[in-house]
Image 1: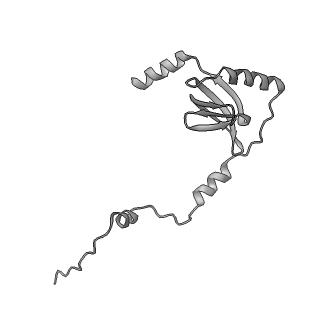
Image 2: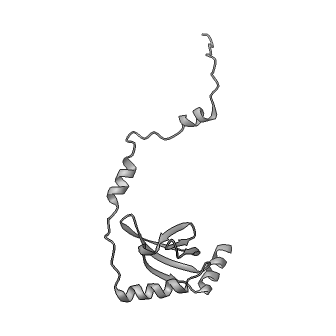
Image 3: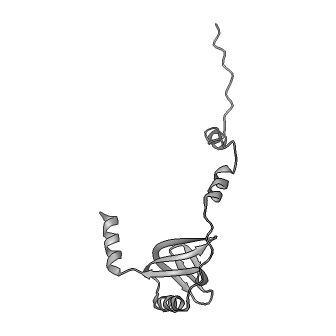
Length: 126
C-alpha cells in the first residue's frame, strides 16, 4: 500500500470560511415566512384630545429624557424605551437612541421618572 498524498492548494481565509457557512437550499424562505407571519395593522387616527395631550408631552421633551414611545412603522405599531437623543422641529423628527421617528408616526409617549432611570442603571451595574 502506498501513502500517496495529493498536494494541498492553499486557500484564502474567505474561501475557507465559505466551506463552513450554512447552506440555504431555499434562499429567501425565512424572510418570506417572517413577512407572511406579520400582522398588518392600519394606522390609528388620534382624537383631538389625544393630539393635544401628545403635543403637550412633545413640548416638554428634552434631549436626555428617558421615554417609552409607541409609533407606527411599516404597517405595524412598535414600542421603544430609551433616551431622547434629538428633537428636530424643522424636520418634525424625534430620535430615541438611534431610532428616528417622524412626529406624524407617534401614537403615544410616556416620560419615565428619573428615579426609574437610576434604578435601571443600578440594575445594570449589579
